[in-house]
Amino acid sequence: MNANEPLLELDSIVKTFKTSAGEVTVLKNINTQVGQGEFVSVIGKSGSGKSTLLNMITGIDHPTTGTVRIGGQYLHKLNEGQLSVWRGKMMGVVFQFFQLLPMLSLNENLLLPMDFARVYPPSEREARAWDLLEMVGLSEVADHFPASISGGQQQSAAIARALANNPPIIVADEPTGNLDSRVAEGVFALFERLAQQGKTVLMVTHDATLAKRAQRVLVLVDGELVNEAVSRVLPHLPHREMLVITKAARQVEMRGGEELPPGSWALIQHGCVEVTLPERGGHTVVEKVESGGILWLADLPEGAQVQACSAVVDALVVEEAGKLLSQTPMLRAGLSRERAERQARYAEVSKAPRKGWL
Ligand SMILES: Nc1ncnc2c1ncn2[C@@H]1O[C@H](COP(=O)(O)OP(=O)(O)OP(=O)(O)O)[C@@H](O)[C@H]1O
Ligand SMILES: [Mg+2]
Image 1 (cartoon, rainbow, N blue to C red):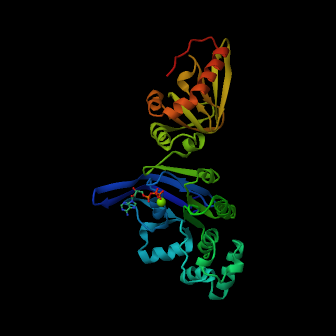
Image 2 (cartoon, rainbow, N blue to C red; image 1 turned 90 degrees about the vertical axis):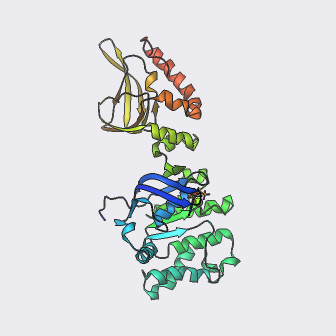
Image 3 (tube, helix red, strand yellow; image 1 turned 60 degrees about the horizontal axis):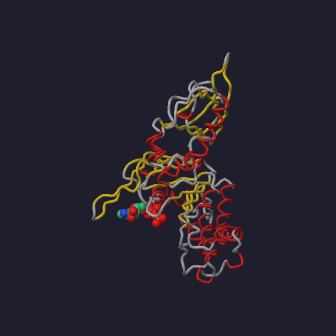
């Protein structure tokens, strides 16, 4: 694998299930990349496709079309036997209901994946199991059976087990879903620490507060992925509105000094732009909009220009914001005051006639 390549790459993933009622497409053209050491949470309503997406990544299930590439390896090129060996080394999987083997002690639960993957020589496995249980605060109960410890402790043991073969990737499907909030916090903190230590963590969660603490949040809506800049800048919008914006917007890249192409709504993802108004003998900068800022271009006075003020600017631009707004009542309501303030500000700077409201 090339050092510059992402650790994980999902390319045009579509997943269709055949059911008695016909075919249902549960994942619709998912594209994303995750780098080494990133902590990514995946959120979305029940049935939006979160578990199905994780199953594509772990190779537990396969996409109908599209490819998954992890650490330079295309998963569809491995047969089932190769895939389970590969998974044992590359991935630690954590589930909502822990899934420790009830007739084995915690220690034995950790030894099992080590014996299967044979990453560590037999002489080192006992010590490694003990070290991992100590790391999650369970060394004193290492010889206990799962049923005799609490839910939080069982989940900690399951995380320790996921780390048994020191995989670069940890995939967790609602690991805190069955824990009370205080215990969930401890388990989440453990994932945060793992990411800080360089593990790549992908975690499905229903807990929006926990999700926000990840570096990246992937939002799934009916099997489609929301643009991450949209969910980051407008986290309070209903997921459905986030998707409407994602679909209406097009990605624009500008170099320093270039003008933003025509449109009526723009979200600055990276870099900055300046809004300038013509004045006798030159231009006045009336506003600088940085990464994460939103501009309603249709509100700008006649003659206003929007230019890149950093070397590179990435933006999302919607040409027809009128149509967008008709489908996004929460966005419209949330931004109306901000727009009015901005209009007032521009009016002070320029007596030029307005282009009018959207
Ligand atoms: N094997 C299957 N056959 C048919 N439909 C399936 C299958 N697995 C999942 N689905 C359907 O795919 C959709 C997405 O399911 P998935 O389990 O990925 O959702 P989820 O986002 O994980 O939901 P939850 O939050 O409830 O866990 C659902 O409508 C589900 O019924
Ligand atoms: Mg699920």
